[in-house]
Image (cartoon, rainbow, N blue to C red; front, side):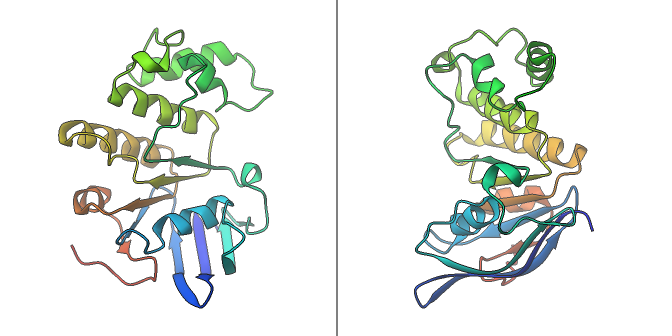
Length: 213
């Protein structure tokens, strides 16, 4: 099977159930998870990417393209993630930041970085200091870094929430277009109904309840 399957996934903190999902996200499909702060949205992504804190307990399976990744370390899960903060390293150039997205043995690293920047409308930005970039440019660099790692799924933890309305729409469209073009299953965590409507896929709470927009 291809895509991302969260099979009878349940996450608890003490006696409280935060996540209860049994869903499949097909290649190119977007699963949107909505809920209030503290409802378990980011906890779900932490479990899927492999960074769930030890004070949480989890049952169920996480399967990506037919491989059970539930017990694998984060690096072995072949997933990309974009956070609310773009998390660019301030001591590295744009090109240096993008280098972290490439596998260690990648050939023609400079050429791949330059080609990716051109595709993102940032040709010639490799030597730039991240501090000199606008919010939209930083978001594009963060997306490119995630894509250069050739992920098999993409996770989004409210990555558009810090952007103004016009820029939010532009970057959201860019992310969703690339994910669909690459046939990546995508899990989007958000509290914004416009994000959910733009994603045009199923919308649920962390407890698996359907959200009707």
